Structure formats: structure tokens, C-alpha cells
Image (cartoon, rainbow, N blue to C red):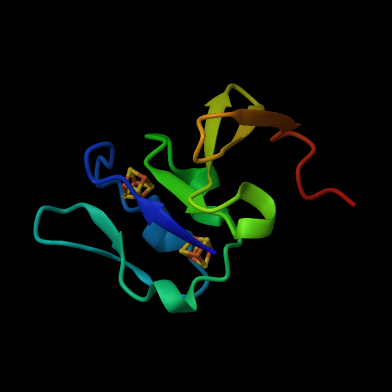
Length: 104
Ligand code: SF4
Ligand code: SF4
């Protein structure tokens, strides 16, 4: 399980680089973010949450998304819509609130 960054969407703001606890996101020569050491990503999702360009997505393990499954995040104000899309195109979306996230 690891994130990936869509270079076509990335605007090079650098927020994911600042927030990644492992320091494993870097910028390439085009000032686009990329994951330098995917094997070190522990899929905390922080980079997904801070990316206003929705350029970051997460590959899911087979158990969660089926082979080739991925999860994307779309923000709508404080609403965070997490969508799991399977290889066959089917999807499911879970909505959480940024206002109450990480409150236990
Ligand atoms: S937060 Fe998003 S837009 Fe900004 S550098 Fe990272 S991937 Fe690119
Ligand atoms: S999911 Fe977490 S550990 Fe992985 S690249 Fe993003 S911020 Fe870094």
C-alpha cells in the first residue's frame, strides 16, 4: 500500500513534502512532487489531505480494493469524500468531516 502522485494534476505547492513524516516526497526537475522511496510510505494519508489539487491517490491492498484498487480524496469545504475504485470500475465513497477528523 502506497500513495502515488499524478504529475498532470500536481501544481508543485510543496505541502505534501512539508507534511510527510518520512520525508520521502521530493520534487523533480519540473517542480512536481514524486514519491522517492515508495517502500517507506506507511500510507498515513497526510499528503492526500493537504493536497488541494487532488493529485495524490493511494493504491490499496488486494483485501481492500481488489487488485488494482485505488483510493482518491475529494474535498468539498470541510467534507472529505474518500472514494475506493476497483479495477472493474465499481466504486464506493465514504464521507468524513475535516472539522471532526482526528478527534477521539
Ligand atoms: S500537495 Fe499536491 S499539488 Fe502540492 S506538491 Fe504535493 S502533490 Fe503537488
Ligand atoms: S502517505 Fe504518509 S508516509 Fe506516505 S508519502 Fe504520504 S505523507 Fe508520506
